[in-house]
Length: 223
Image (cartoon, rainbow, N blue to C red):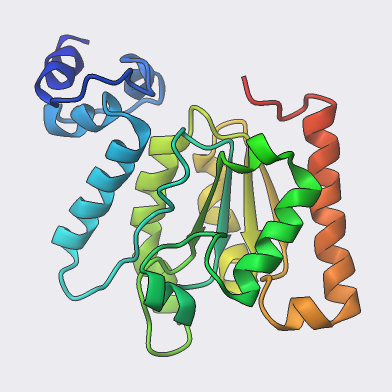
């Protein structure tokens, strides 16, 4: 694709692109030269470029940053609910945040993945901007286009999507046709209730244990 090649040269990044130039075409996409430039960027640059575009398109919404520790296009996407109080403080959606939800997320991920594989898990939210109230159906409807853009960006590497919590699980019909061959699993939001209620803890642990088994037998092995 001559267009994407010229965009890649003009992007100013010397690092190896995380996408092949033919992937947008394989995904059936018709994209502008400007959009194709994102596909030629190193992963974090592409992710941040997309986030900058969201902030420009939605100036009345405040978006946190993606986790800068995720340096490669992820094998697993985790969608939670909406950015919480600790994310309000750190301005980053990350399992490294010093709060109970992030720590529980770390614990669950350790059930499914070894340390190296955990670094290729991207956590985000069903409503990706800050709210001063509980999420509403209208928030989810508005967020769908952004989720579609994110899934398009990471789909070539994506092996698994985890929808944790009621609002995230409600995205199942929207996400299913947009994840390629990736598996989709549901679970409980790893907030306070899923940290203290035995039944919720056990059910989440079972989801992540099953996920580990799938990785071990190669069903969703990262290429």
